Amino acid sequence: MKICFIGTGYVGLVSGVCFSDLGNNVICIDKDREKLSRLVNGDIPIFEPGLSELVRKNLDAGRLSFSDDLIGSINKSDIVFIAVGTPTAKDGVSADLSQVFSVAQLISKKIKTHKIIVTKSTVPIGTGDKIEKILNKNKKKGLFTIVSNPEFLREGEAIKDFKYPDRVVIGANDKKVIKIFNELYRPIVNKGAAFVSSSRRAAELIKYASNAFLATKISFINEIANLCEKVHVNVDDVALGIGLDKRIGSRFLRAGPAYGGSCFPKDTKALAKVGKHHNSPLSIVNAVINFNEKRKKDIENNIYRILHNKIKNKTICFLGVTFKANTDDLRDSSAINLISKFIKKGAKINYYEPSGSKEILDKQKNVNYFDDLYSATKNADLIIIHTEWDEFKNLNFSKIKNNNKKITIYDLRNLYDSKSFNNKNNITYYSIGRPVNA
Image (tube, rainbow, N blue to C red; front, side, top):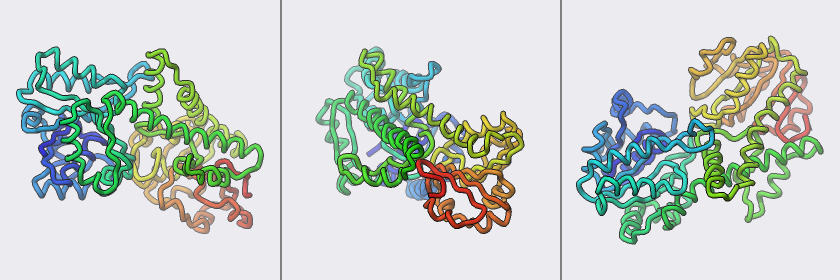
C-alpha cells in the first residue's frame, strides 16, 4: 500500500519504518529539513535499538523515503497517518492538539481524491470528530474517511511492539475501511495479534485508558512499597504473590521511582481533564496523578535521610538519568527533578548514562558527565541506581570499593538481592520497599 506519515517523531518514524519493512511504500514527512537530511543518511535522531539498521535497509530497498513536501506526499498516498506531537498544553493538563488540527487544515484544502486519514498520535476522545468537521467545512465531504489507530509502542522495545503487538485497534465506522486495515495489518495479525475494530471514539479512549491503567499499577505497587518499608516486608515477595494471580498479572508491578516518559504523565492528566469536561470525574486516575507527584517527594526525602540531611558538598552519583532503560528520553525523569533539587542545596552531581551525555544537565553548575561508570562513582558519598540498564545489573562492587572506602547505594530499581549485602564490609545498600540489608 502507499502510505505517508506526517511527523517523524518517535511514533511516526518507528511506525513508518516498520510499515515499509512489511513491504509497503512509505513516505515520512517533516518540515525540519535538517532532520530529514540526517534521516536520509541513516542518522537517527532518537535512541531506539535496531531502528537505524531498519531505516537503512528500507531506504536501500526503495520502500522508504523522507520528504518535506506535505501536499505532494499526501496526493501520492492512499492512507495518511497523522503522527505529530500532542504534548501537554499550557494549562498543564489538557492535550495540545494544535499540530493535529493544523495538519487537518492543510489536508482539507489540498486533497483531490479520496484519502483514509488516520490519527496515530495519542488524542482525546472526540478528536476524530473535530478533524472530520474541519474537512467538511472546506467542502471535502466524501473525499476522506477518518480513522483512529492508536499506537502501543514502548520506548526501547518499539520495533518488537510494532511487529508483535498484543492487539491492533482500528476505530472506524466504515466496514470497507476496516477491511483495508485488516489487509494492511495482516502480516502482524497472522503472527497472533488480536485485531480489534471499534467505533472511532472507543479507539481513542482505549489508548488513554490503557496508559492510565498501567500508570495505576505502577503507583499501586509503589504505594504498597511504602507500606512494606514501614512493616519490614519485602515488596518483591508481595509483587510476586499478587502478580501470579492471572486476573492481575506481574507486569508493571515493579516498585521504583515515579513513572515518567512521554506518555503516562501527559495522558493521565489529559484523561482526567476529559472526565471533568464531561462531568464524569475520574477519581482513581486523579489519585494516581497525585500519588505520582508525591512519589517524587518520597524518593527525595529518602535520599535526605540516607545522607542524614547533609546535602551540601556531598557528591551524589547517578547511574542512569533517562526515565527508563533503552531510551534517551528524559521527559519527566525522576533523575532530572532530583538533580535540580540537590544542586540547589549545594550537592555535586556525577552521572553516567549509557545513551550519552545530556545537554540539559551539562549546562548546570556542579553536574559532571562521565563516559566511564566506575570513574563516575569515584569518591561518591551516595550512588543512586536510577535506571534499569542491563550494565547496571552486574556491577563490580570490588572495583567501586577501590575508589571509595565506604559505599552507600540507593537502588531505585531493586536490581540486587538486598540479602547479598549482609556480609559485605563497607557497603550500605538501600532499595525500594525492602528492609535495609535484609
